[in-house]
Picture 1: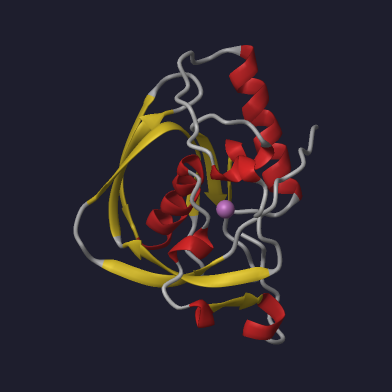
Picture 2: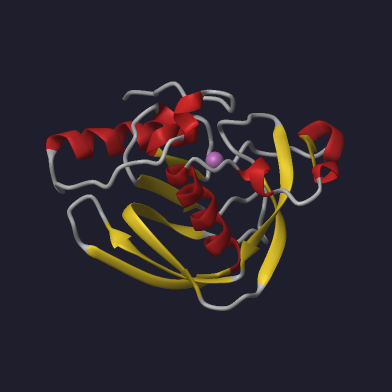
Length: 177
Ligand code: NI
């Protein structure tokens, strides 16, 4: 089990354009994904992008499990997405609160496309092609932004809608991602 250091906003490595993965089902790619899963689970995150642990490749993971503390929260299947391509299916956007493991303790209100098709490959090279909406679509857009050096505060429309969890949501137990 290897928990990697998650880079924090301000680190220039989070601002790079990540490179495509060329070879699938390699020991290096499997090891990267194991480290990403271990790190995401240890920090109780919803998703993680390889650049967040300093690896400049187009690889993201995400998953949202049923949580008894949040019975109404939408779940998202455990997914490995390599070289993703995102296609919004309409101009419709929703605003929702986001956090990020690279910006611990904070939240911002971020507009995202409501309906989205995403394509890519898993770590074995198998094709993934899904049409999603709502929270699932939001998580994918957040994680894939990391591959283009975009952190969610860059998308917050009004910086009044960006702040510390305990100030924005007093008394609530808010996760970092
Ligand atoms: Ni993030």
